[in-house]
Length: 353
Length: 184
Image (cartoon, rainbow over all chains, first blue to last red; front, side, top):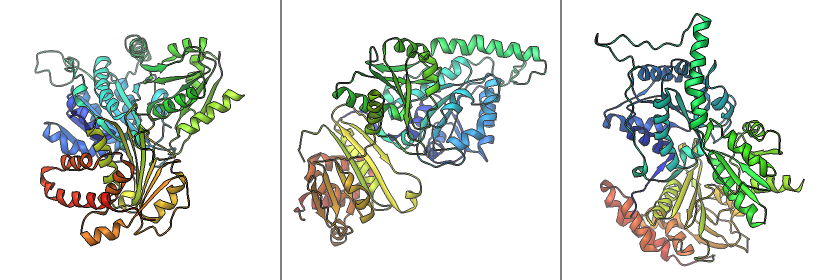
């Protein structure tokens, strides 16, 4: 018998966070991510950690800022409307060069929207997760096992680059039960945090954690430094993607997260009909695998983007493809999950044109 | 149902909240996992948890796990009339309907699926055993997706120590469904 356990994506994320040394969780309830807070409330005390239901999302994200400033591995989670509330704090965390992990288990929007799965926070997550010249690393797992693995990766990347990292899932991945093997996780010891404001005991100069620069020259220098030593290096080193049969393809279907599972079936359906179909899946949505998509655009004939939104990733694929090849879109939104047949039909339709 | 040909089963279980629909989904996925198959189970969530209709989609595959959702399940477990009406037309050709005839008075007119009717709610009252496990018994005998022994072993394995006393009752329900003669 295997050592697999059957778990929801939300639960696997929580357990993986604890396994890799996260001892602080701050959250506020919202469907469809409540299993995370529930799991943390039960497990954190057993692991010697601390889990708190804050009075609001805004309070929770600022508690994350405080814990991170003190050097802790810290985690918060929410779903779309709650993530919007956290954006101010996320910008402060980015501006203070603090590491943390934020999970967005997306639901349909805008507004309160619905509670069913969606990917309509793509733009928010990859382009505008807060005000100012800032961004996050955004990981988009597509299975419960990968949610666990990406959680560990998220903490490692957050500490390595001192940046917030977002795990972008959705209601389906969060609620879905699949076997997960925690034995496969590669747990690394968190690095020494010499910058943390955790008490200097008169043995070193005080560390100051701050995101306020009243002199524009200082602020510009801080931002330039952050781009040079953080974002540019992340762009260079941390791009992740999966692909098959993209060379010379008649059509490459580009999708991430839960949709990539469905798109893979559609690609195989197209192949059964004799279409040279390829599959491309950005695993990191930020940094986006533009370079590889640009190479694929040299030989592939066209792209079809599929997401659970109105086509938010389409522009990124167009930019990456350098307008060399047509980029079409098919998706469902509002909480409806697309089916393999729908993606297949959308691909067949654009191929006929 | 063409046994042993389908490498991937997609199953939708649907009924009222409280009938044990989510247990059916989780137990099918667990059994598949114990047998080293690829499995996924997506429950419905939200208002269903407080009553109303509830359903879940289970995929069990010998090969690669693809889409965790389906429009056309190979197997439908319909525990009440609204679930039957909502899903029976979506069953894939050569698929299988397992229907709780205690609460579904209608009979499907489809000729391209295998149909099994079992008065599971009545049986559960009569024998004082859980209705959802009776449905599971009928499911495995009708489709051969698992053997009786495989499923019984998974029930035993998944019960926590504190609830082992419930095993006999569940095995009894499983056997009741498994041995129930087909009826139209």
